[in-house]
Length: 162
Ligand SMILES: [Zn+2]
Image 1: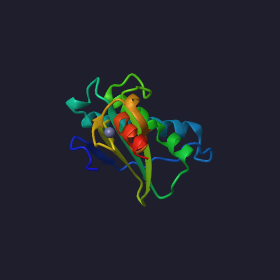
Image 2 (image 1 turned 180 degrees about the vertical axis):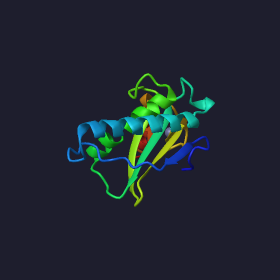
Image 3 (image 1 turned 30 degrees about the horizontal axis):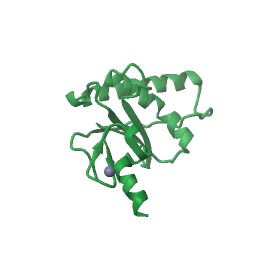
Image 4 (image 1 turned 90 degrees about the vertical axis):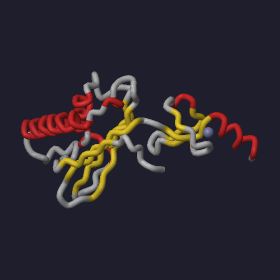
């Protein structure tokens, strides 16, 4: 599947430290680091804003932590929390729990340590008929991770064929 041509992407030379690691220094240093990540991400996100992102558009936000060491899933979500908050700030969302945004966390090995942010329209495609649909509720089968599903008409066809 081709990426949406409206996708806006930035790579920041920003190392995102591991999430819940107590030996990562004093809590006040840690809080300062979290605040600086949130602020930096907010500023960058503001530069990514496009008219198509305005409400009520639904957005798909991908965050990729690029670092020398791969984290477990829980730690990755915690580590990327200030990034998620910063993007919500930059987009002017009331909070990072906004139903307009589908958040996706990902990670890659990278020696230097950086962060990739990509914002695209939140569209989902039926793998039966290829139709684009925006409302997850009308899907019979839906994989939110891959943003792909099977619409009701297609699933009825599948069930009557087999
Ligand atoms: Zn379909």
